[in-house]
Image 1 (tube, rainbow, N blue to C red):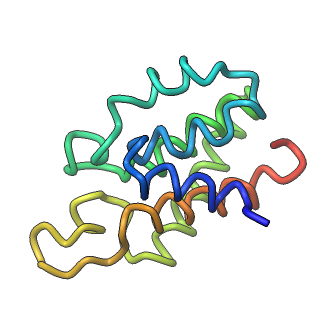
Image 2 (cartoon, rainbow, N blue to C red):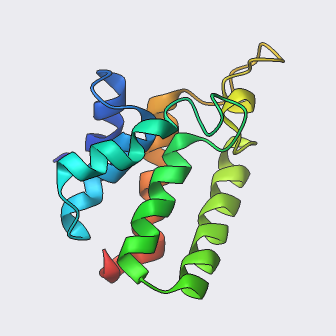
Length: 130
């Protein structure tokens, strides 16, 4: 049986969605967000924020779902911090260009795996809320 994290990773793997869209569109039904809107709001976050300069798009997408699921600014922030900490611990970075090894030549994690990790942590953190 495919889990949502596997569905999200497959969206990225087949190039139908960018990393942020892969996460947001996989969980949009759980937070009452139409899929077309999910595609649009996450569209600018492919290749990380700032075109690989900033945070991985999968993390950004997970943050969008956290915000919609909790609808509480302080709770969203604490849950986002937890997700980013766990992602950093597993992968060694949260910035796209570091994950892709743009400057070092050493890829820390492929995009579909980043999407799967962000989705896994999202599910763990939100649990029954999702």
